[in-house]
Length: 185
Image (cartoon, rainbow, N blue to C red):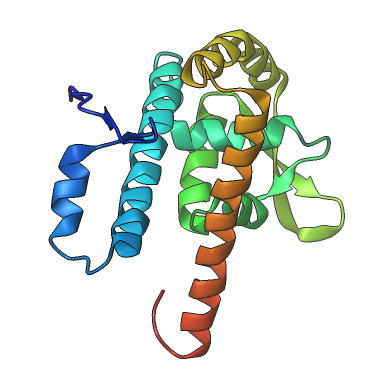
């Protein structure tokens, strides 16, 4: 899929997407509503851009973006992580995490080991081959992220991180509220 950057600058010199603005104007009543919808669309666009970069970097190495996410989490663990915990921290279903662990295990990057705290349970643990894979992936990953965030100041990166995490926290609160009221999030 080929993206066509048709971004323009507003009167303050800040970027916006005129195609998104035109589409969102159709079902907003106020300028504040329009800004909210445009911001949501910009977050989706940015997320897709980062995910495309991650997928591009990992697929050439035989690992999907989802499997890469689990491998990164396992690489940061000394003693392995339960599949349930991997699912929770990655924001995927246990079934999805199990499939990703199966794939990584088949590729020799992860293994299942008994949980020393619960004999009925197993942990996913990164293998030496998985750690070597991560070491080889580190430099290309650093270069890609630097390129993606080229031109951002450290202060802008801190603000961007904060804003994204605030959005995620708002979504979690909303989902909890909807669950409590019997509505599906």
